[in-house]
Length: 132
Image 1 (cartoon, rainbow, N blue to C red):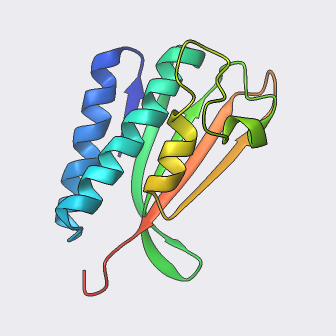
Image 2: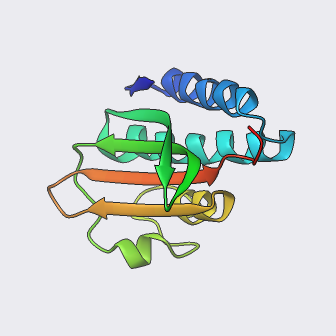
């Protein structure tokens, strides 16, 4: 599923879509909360830094296992220093610098593809519980 992210209400929509799919996949309430919080963080980055973008939520194979995959993509200014962007407290905006590092801690994996002027793609995932 794809959720366009243009305004703050779209963050709520993306979060809810992630919660619903995670629940259907058999994630625990704790994992569902972590997934929806991580979605909020990356969606908020879209509205704060890029203006518009989209969140894709799918089940896909990653490293030979099923995973709930969230992709946050925008055509914004890009991230000049991805390593620094993943450090707690680093922010180029008004935030506390906890968005990307926080999302990384909440999920099983987080990758960023970005460069100045090229937009950003954040892909993060959580392994689907076995038996689901």
